[in-house]
Image 1 (cartoon, one colour):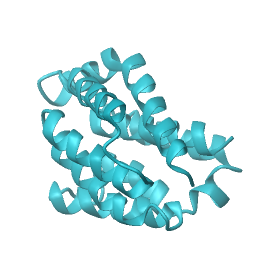
Image 2 (cartoon, helix red, strand yellow; image 1 turned 45 degrees about the horizontal axis):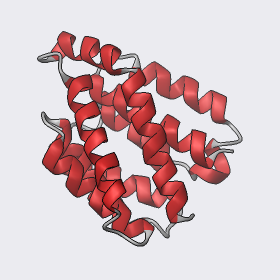
Image 3 (cartoon, one colour; image 1 turned 120 degrees about the vertical axis):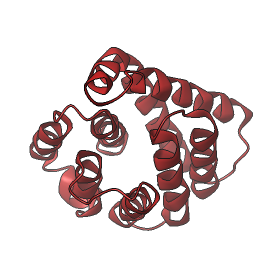
Image 4 (tube, helix red, strand yellow; image 1 turned 90 degrees about the vertical axis):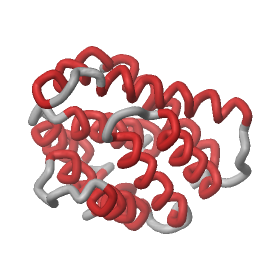
Length: 174
């Protein structure tokens, strides 16, 4: 996969996050302070600003910069979680996507000391447990239904993770 595809993925994620900011905030009011959508939009915009400066030249460096930017600019619990996931995935951009997503899954579990049955991790697990490009995309609609069911648990991290993977399918599944 090429650097440009990774950039398109993050641009698509930004668009989905902005479109769903209010819903993410709504989900966060059920379990937190109601600002997950606002925070993740802020972090996503910071990533777009980083992309304008282009301090990277390959997918691995790009993913590392995304992780560092999210760690620095994404407030709340998801900043360290998404930051750790992208930093871990940066080491595996040339591996099959399921290997890359598995390292992101493990980083979230470790960093957040998150139980494996947490809704956010369940969304990541669906992508970590399958070869996304060979298995998930031909079964895209079934996979989306499974992830939507998990994401509709009203967990804002699960739903924003769903949007991250929906953006992946939108870019890489064509």
